[in-house]
Image (cartoon, rainbow, N blue to C red; front, top):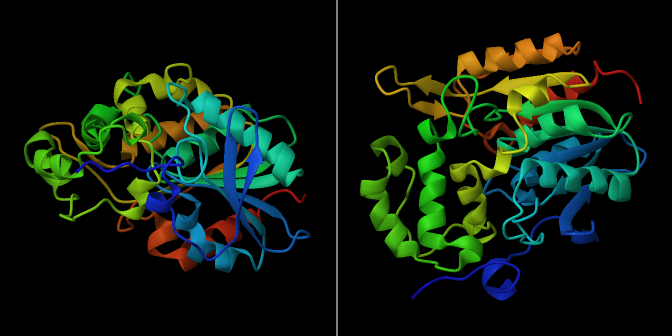
Length: 315
């Protein structure tokens, strides 16, 4: 029997979390989010990665709320936010966040994003309205490595891309197919062996995938997500201080396959481009850390972010 999830199937899809959720109308989408911390504290925007909803930050939010007023969002197509068929692009998602900052936060903000959210943190560091962003943390972002036609290092099709293609093929846009069992069976032959190991057999999808529109995966696999947002061009326009955290990575020299979010070559290119734009970029390497520091070690994530934030110009 196929599965169907998303805003049209709330009883099957959503569960309660530690913080109250609310939605804000941004025009094309209603963005779901949660807030923690005092309004008089510095503002912090947290952007989840692909297949992650805002509540992936719950444990980190508890720690960070002692220092910041924390806003954690669901991007379009994830969590309780609106699904937008055919409209999953970095520019659309970045502009959602610009509107969110204006309407929900209303003051200068520090931004931190994981993975695809880290790419959107980079987008905001380059393209947000002047005077709205204090600094941006890119948490293990697939810069260059999530492009199909990239100017530096392995592309998405040499990295996690086949997993996204599998999601799209067997789950379908907006969970229109929902063949969870078929996807698990196909993973053994349609994914590289190292990637197939991530598929833990289960009777139903994990909560994160229930809240995810698989059309996101198609947008990355086909390249439409970044068709109007070249990463090198974006990074050359960064206008605020940046912290790049770089986690586990390995490149198979025989195949060019990247296991991880971005290679050392790609991280170095990010640093070169941001520095050439005239902005300070700090780099911290955590080669034994999994993709999500805020999920694996929320205290370390909070410590890294807080210490770096103290070096930024005052509000």
